[in-house]
Amino acid sequence: GTQLFYYAAKSLKATERKHFKSTSNKNVSVVGWMVMMADDPEHPDLFLLTDSEKGNSYKFQAGNRMNAMLWFKHLSAACQSNKQQVPTNLMTFE
Image 1 (cartoon, rainbow, N blue to C red):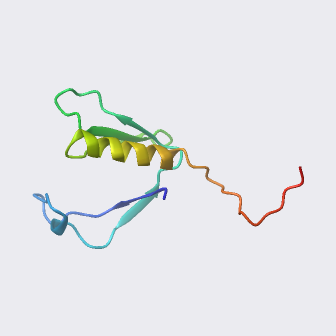
Image 2: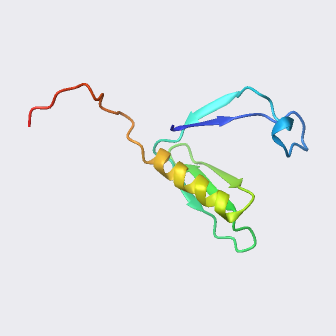
């Protein structure tokens, strides 16, 4: 979908899924946000997600370039989603 969920870490050294809480404590819609691959040759797995309306930018590291590209692809689609989807059961008169 278009929601990004945040799961807080149980400790500062959290690196694995089991080190994070099982329920999310924050979620935001990324519709209208911008995602781009970071231009960092030393870290090809970085991408940025920016909410230009609030001025927030988040840097993510995906582990490898292929995972970063998958995140980029799916987040790009979510960011460009239309806020108001027209229900499929409406009639049109064209």
